[in-house]
Length: 545
Image 1 (cartoon, one colour):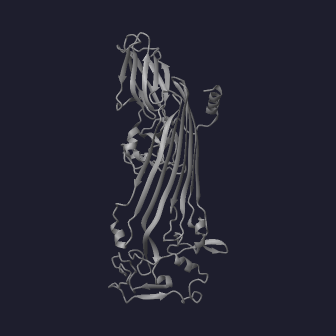
Image 2 (cartoon, rainbow, N blue to C red):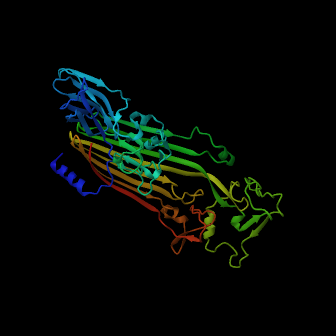
Image 3 (tube, rainbow, N blue to C red):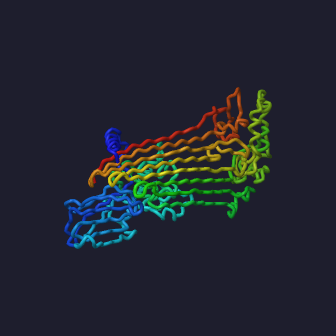
């Protein structure tokens, strides 16, 4: 690393305010070097080497025989300990997990350095941790193998002990902190528990660590912690392409859909993409790229309130002495096919009142034709199990829906030297949802939609100043733009929206053709719904270990 770069980081560490402390994802490794009599050995050269990237770091045990690596990228390591007069010791299969605080003691035997003692640690052996935090870890192949229909790595959090829904060890959801590569990735306005603004697909995430209680002070905000580490490239090129398909071809229809003559619900989902990672410069610079996409088509049965045929002509019907009730009521006034049904407690036969003509100023529907135009969007009822049966009922049908999502991820890891490393991650995601907002209640009616335009970036620079002091500089940004236009905001619906002197408006009755359900005045002003959510994070932590 150049002197200019180090000077910039030092100035930034002092100048910029600290948003949060120490939410790093790097691991720490330390231990004591002794001989076969348990006497401590100072001055031992200790090297750790990442087996997948070839990146190594070196230190020397101090006068108490203690060695320390305060910041190492999570991964599979081996430790090499050397000192003249003792056999060379190699300890393999040291698996450092995200944010781990591991302690590995080394024992050297007297002998020549040309003799090598090689020890292998079992991969499933729990390392001694220098922390009182309680939690669990999901790593590597487990993330790929566990069944996750949505392929969202955050769904793995529920597999850990002490978690019920979004509550970690009984803590409120507002006290949680979800980070990715050390940066908070939650919704910035409202803490909704275990969530991320940007989809955390299983092909993106390498490890997920869950800390239920108590969280160490270095984690910053949150009594409960969910820490995610993204994948990195290695010295070997690796990649994969994938396609997951779900279809309703072999699904049976539901009993209620069959009863109403509605086709079965449809869910066709395709999740596909590819990833590749490898070296840019061996043992020094690595990349990882992931494209992840989803296409989803749905058709679900919905029931909307509509006027009956007589009611839309201005005739409202009732039986004297009883309340109108649909076919599912204890005392119905209509059969399932819509035929009026006189209750035994009724005081007379079916009656109806024509609302037109009672008021001299209302002899027919409005002369503008607005009400008639809105009623044209409303189909006749086919379900008399809702509403009052005689004047209002239901229309049950299959409504289209779906989602289109595209996500692009890139990560670059670079080692300047044995004491300075950096990595940069960037994600961009687009999502579009059909009928995602104010969905149309009737076939052919205007509808709204919703979409997201999100991106996230994160730069980490870690400097090991000494075996006891490490500085972590982190800067990141998260921008989430959510847009949910109403039906009257969609240009394609303009011909179906009512206008008065060029001002668009909607009418309030049972439910309008635009999906607006209100009980207020005659018209509602047209508004546009747009929400912008953005977060900017700057962390710098200099800690002594």
